[in-house]
Image: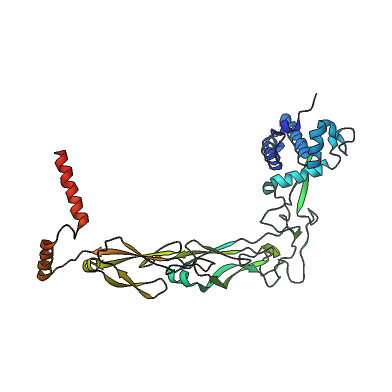
Length: 380
């Protein structure tokens, strides 16, 4: 029976990229893997066909030969090997394929959790820190206390009792992984005896009970740069949890939150401040003093006839931009306050002012009610 085209087997076109080939094989191999279909001979054969097709097409030279000669490229010695041109190392190469595609599920290579020697990497830690807006403006150096796991000083992190050493795992011979053959292919798995470490401890350290680490509270110095925003994350490399039995240390991440301020609201590098002013200041104009985020007072000139909501920009009075020489601006928004608790004299003066008022003094009000009168006249 004629062999099926390798591209058709993988369900891709002849112009498929390496990533397309890999994705197609990953999806179909999971679907037809013998472990997922026990006793299904059809799935087993389909899995073999997929493996054969991917092995040929993932290699640029083999793919070029197949594109030119088809299946004949791997017959009669052209492929440079045995049946199908794969030779006796096919099972080993298939192990590499599975390691590449399914390593995260089978405990293969490349996981972040283990170092190259099989030792487990320590966990990353998170520390939440709240700072004030002023501290975010100027930056600060803070001291924090972090409970974490550190390398055991008694055994220097090895986990073995003083005077002894860990021994190579007898199950995997110190490799940290074992191979299991299933007929046509071979799969590498993490050694169940040493959990990938490649060594076992016969006489554990009494201080850490063989873990190679102990829990202790440490004091660390954290540099918070000027201009940080709410949610900024600061990474302290190798300040996380120590790895098991001498494994690599994790990282510590500082997550910053900024306390709400009594006067200021922040939007990126800009600062906003709402300032109440009297009706007379809004009408006649004048000067007011307002605070800035750097803790000083500055004067703002209010032109006559200012209304509620009017903004005034103070250039360069905002927050510094993180890791740059730029600075945001500050925006003052005035809120005209209506007088309350008037004395008789104040009321008389306002009533006199109202009598003397004309359309020019309140153009918005006069215009609005004129339009209302016109609207009611037309609708009536």
